[in-house]
Image (tube, rainbow, N blue to C red; front, side, top):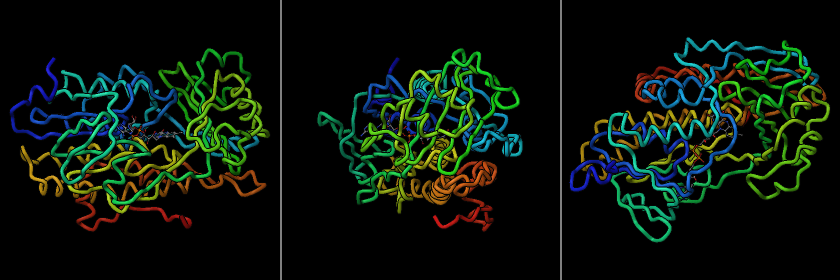
Length: 430
Ligand SMILES: Cc1cc2nc3c(=O)[nH]c(=O)nc-3n(C[C@H](O)[C@H](O)[C@H](O)COP(=O)(O)OP(=O)(O)OC[C@H]3O[C@@H](n4cnc5c(N)ncnc54)[C@H](O)[C@@H]3O)c2cc1C
């Protein structure tokens, strides 16, 4: 099978370098596939493993994914359509149920295993079964610098690659970000850490949880909410695994191993201590976890720019956010769709100005919305109850309309240009 660069040797086309083979980089590679484009993804790792955890794509992202014809790839992931959010207080009383009928948004909230989603995107990007040239993915290729005006990137070992368009999809610790923004913009610790567990469902057999409290087999997202800590859990991989994320303030997590570190191994006794006083059935599930990962959560402030010259930032490199809206990866799909839409008319061998103008349209369409969702994610991370109270203040339905009601970047920009105001929620002082 010839690579994209071999197909295009000696021809005029559009050469695109994508830095980072995570969800944002791969989604964009798929979105931009074309017979006249040479797309190279540079990934620093060997791409052998993704985090063992679940990830949900919200209706705004699911709608985009469906329009790309990825069903043959994603179907292999045994995706589950989420049907409800059920929220319990710390005493284990059901306080809110939101049934997820997303027909009004034109797509579902879908649960995947991260590894499966990543593999499906990688397979789709490099497949010969989709329109356009297969994308070339170069692993063990860590980018060390980027000239955003020339469109050149240098990788470890000193090799320099030249492109018409450079897309920085290199995650929260992006090296491309500084080249684009013009100053360092580091990831900010948010004061919250996340324990992550993934349990085979067989390990949960024999649990004495009434089905009206938790039915492990049902595609439902269950939340248990305390004042400054909470747990979010649900099934994945066709119901074969059960995923849990437990958020806790850094200073209360009874862990020393994560000090100063980004991702660490957590301990189940420390996790149980952090959630003492939560329902016994939930703690019983924790006790059965084979192991537990611990992530110190960081985000970034909205950036003043995503574009410089021939280069644009996308995904976590552009708008890393807390996971409390489940929108980080979903926003990356919106970025990919926006690039697909605004680069569609770019001629072969585009000038720097033509590229810059197209990228600025992407920024114009995407920046306000992604920045607001970053802020909504911080808002949703605020205490779930008042101190000493069991009354849950969080409402997962609150941001749904704004987040999920999305029909692509061109429509979004057209509505904005026509002065159609998209309903936003006010934020409490973030
Ligand atoms: C606990 C938790 C739960 C979450 N749950 C959800 C959810 O349910 N739904 C959702 O939509 N989002 C969720 N997110 C957010 C989501 O995981 C991220 O927003 C998303 O993975 C970002 O993708 P990315 O490709 O931008 O970055 P990354 O996944 O970080 O990928 C960046 C890639 O770039 C590579 N790279 C980095 N530097 C270089 C370099 N110099 N040269 C070459 N390659 C490089 C990396 O190796 C990596 O492969 C969650 C996040 C967390 C922490």
